Image (cartoon, rainbow, N blue to C red; front, top):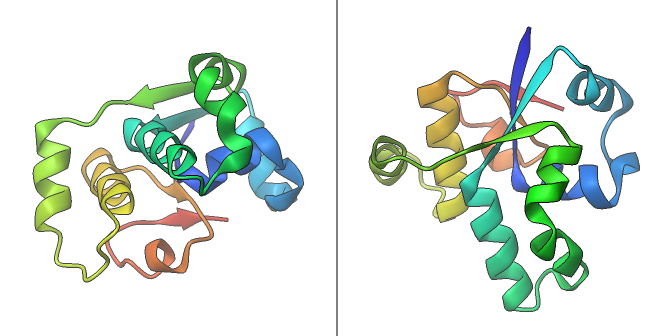
Length: 130
């Protein structure tokens, strides 16, 4: 059994442009034996960036977020106080609050992160898949 945590861009690409994800990663994410998690931070990030005009093509993702997760067979990973405290205290110069939460969740839940983001790939305490 494989478990994975999707970075926000991986979630968006799965929904809007799966051809942007390496074929092997796509097979793993879509495999019935894979448990896919999506951080609540991704919902927050998508909605915020869409509101600010940075994700103009994400209106359907925002309005149908729950249905998209069901279609992907993904489980939402809530942000707990422990996740938030860990995100805030990570010894990491990266300032993006969404990435910090996702990394904290990956560390605390022992989940590899599906990402091509160099900032996450280089963070030593997590494993990434791409």
